[in-house]
Length: 110
Length: 114
Image 1 (cartoon, rainbow over the protein chains, first blue to last red):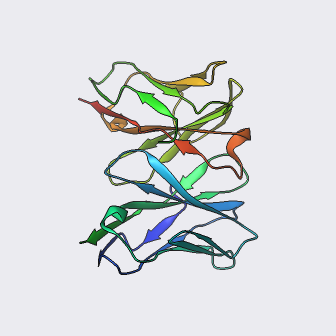
Image 2: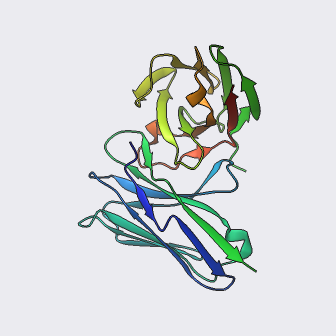
């Protein structure tokens, strides 16, 4: 079963707009990670936020984590056509495995 | 580029056959994890190897097995293939059991079982 659930399942925006994706998970975590996947290829690690962190930034990416609500959000600012991809959150609990959601498919129109 | 490579890129097999997928980890990484990603789904954890020993397994039957070699390359073997085994298989390498560590994914092997 998949622990993370992304919302929305699909998102279409115009270049320059911001994109926000949300993720919910079910059990306690050590960290939550966000990955990007282009056209069914390999996953690219974007950012890791630990359970004791509330917000983290990396370039145009901003991730928040609310452990009381078991939720996280990924904000991509000033989106570009090259940001078109599927985005997955992955929760890591007390073990080594990552538990992924089904992903959000983002389309950025030029 | 993550430094993780996988071979082959695509593979077609028939039901009942056996398949071996290969992964070459990023240099110095002692942990490799394998994931199965069905179409339209997120990746699901199959198992992890640390220093050539299995270290954690997901909800997959024993016909899914693996090996990790001293040079940190690894294999995923699947026996008695079923149609539902059709998926993208991803390996990911990391340091130190991958806890609180970034995992670096390869490009995947797309397996089609007919």
